Length: 284
Image (cartoon, rainbow, N blue to C red; front, side, top):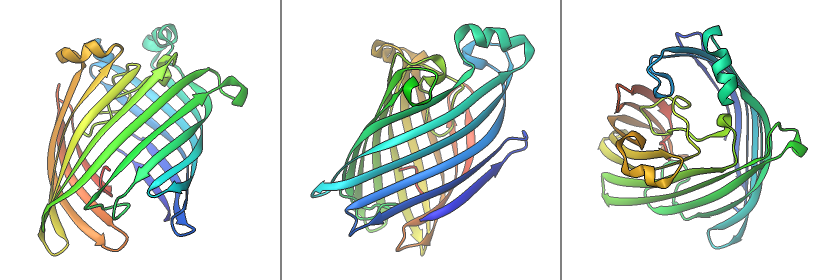
């Protein structure tokens, strides 16, 4: 699959992305790449839970590539490269404060290893199988970045057809950092929340995605999950670190063989966080 996508919002924010997702050599080799550029204007009513409204502009340019090769039945091994230029501009009142806490963006470049197990029956619209993915990114000044730090990612997804019309998809996902600057911290990645509004070194979540066929190519989706954003895992026992999400919507199977699905849904989180989403593809 080769494609281009663009986004523009009423806040005069925009993003443009070129991407490629390829499977070749009898699916023994996989290569994915993407390049993106954009500007995001954010108007926070309660930035970083300070109770103070803040306006920021995030300018982002990024490139990512990943290659994996089959090393056994359903197992893949490979590497990845990521390069990001990320600049945060704040209104003058907050510019000095952002400098003090290190939230000014950065240039970063990193490489890492990828280990994947994939037994899904369809890469984009699975109804059975499992996917286990772990990968790391070692950001280094020697590669052209401004900081030395490490990021570790892990995800496990399970797909079960409970009836002819009902598929339950479950996912556990996490992102953990080591010695990362504030701009490299993790954020809540559940639907219903704005990424980057809350930042901590580590994050993990568990989600359930219910996919119910109604008639022909139309279906109903019910999405729910709970995440924890923390510095120490003990914080997950407190309400401040917990982020729930619940939503529902409709889906349309645009092309069955390729597994291309369009979803429209509404998801709500805590503290008046919510969002309306129109997306191509399931969240996982």
